[in-house]
Image (tube, rainbow, N blue to C red):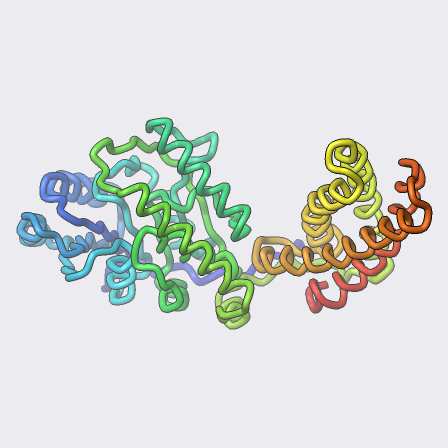
Length: 404
């Protein structure tokens, strides 16, 4: 039998008259670094890129000699252009330049060139071939080689862990200043990105992920710039506000994800239709493991939290794991698209299970007064069996409706 394949986009025509690649360098008051960095980038592209390219210096309302330096570079190199914006914001600069570019592949990198340029060809290649839609450099894989202080390392890893927990992000490094996107994909996503600052990258990636686009990651060699002008406190606060806003939009359905998936999402691998019996068996196996984990957690927590507190803690932990396991194993849903919504709906189902099991415990204590651990566990197992039946019904008919 022939193996199914994923649908992919058409390869980019590299002999077109327009530039194939547009590399944007956003700058604000970078009169010292701009000249050496652009010359180094231009030399590298001339030596390694076999198609037309452009370097666009996006000046974010600089107040020093940056505009004069940029103009001199544009006069020196035919491949260098300058765009001046009268308002600050890296996201604003990228959206403006990318939205008006005629190149097929749009990239950007930080002016300090902290990322080794040797990662640029593998960043661009999967976009040119049609294999991927976006590509990002990552400093957070074992293959990456990174030199930076402990504070920035902790902040970076903490931020990306936060994205995984709040927005179900599946990419590893949201903020590395080394990214590229196909222009046809950018045209669909950029109008929906609201942030104009540092959260721009994260918002774009989360939208792409939830639209079913493929994100390619390239491990990079990266050396921290000790002269970075990023205000960490202000950036962190802005990112937290962005996470809250974007999470609310995903949960409320404010974003046109169905349309984006129809336009950008890649066709899933063909798989046999899951029968009800097969789903029941898999759900049952997941349920058995979840129940054992629940009982173990309850027994460990009960001496410290009491019966109700232990029940709440054990159910909360196992509910999240149970929803993720059923999503993947029972209903065959892969990828991170809609994972946040599924977990939110799963928690509502969990609340019903909590009401059922807590009610059973309360009824036991009301009727029998003081009880043994064995009696509590017996009642909880019975209540959990009923909650499990309710859970399967709701998961199949509501949470994962139409996806199995």
